Length: 239
Ligand code: 6PG
Image (cartoon, rainbow, N blue to C red; front, top):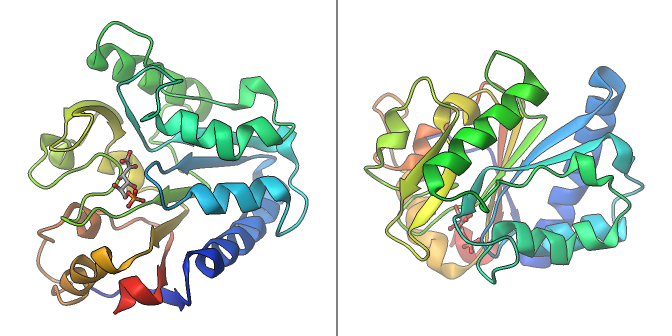
């Protein structure tokens, strides 16, 4: 597949470039729509980007106009070590004056994952209205077998046309997860794939060598957002 990619020496440089590119999107979104809504990624890779954002490394953010959502979440309490929300709170939210009402975590305190997915879809509908959300920016990581958010190879969520949010079982720890579906990710106005480290090299090459004409074997290749999609890679992932 054709990948619009940029390659940086290391995770630090990649993260700074991503924060700078995001800052331009924030300015534009706030000027055009009065707010910036972002779907955040979990995993380890974005932590440095969040910390740089909190530091104001690319300039001042109008926090009262920023809305944080999550592209996926693990079904664990929000203070669990494996929670994507917790990682974001520690690297970003705790350090910036964002109003609490602008932070929209997946409600993993509900009794079971399908309930949390349902509640999160209602939260998205309340914010975005009836048509599928168009995030100003969605951040996505890449798993070594090609997963993005919690869309793993073979997941029924990849075929979902109507629901925006689903509870899924992932072949990873923890297995119970909540994820946005391609019905949402394919609407994104801007998408950044953040990919760092040598262990991602094989999957980056595999995605690159797929033909654009056939449906991708990998969830990452199934995300073809309407807007601009950029791949931020470091040298180790690029190979
Ligand atoms: C999650 C994710 C997931 C992640 C990739 C890459 O909740 O696990 O959102 O899709 O982005 O697994 O993770 P790393 O950045 O840790 O390699």
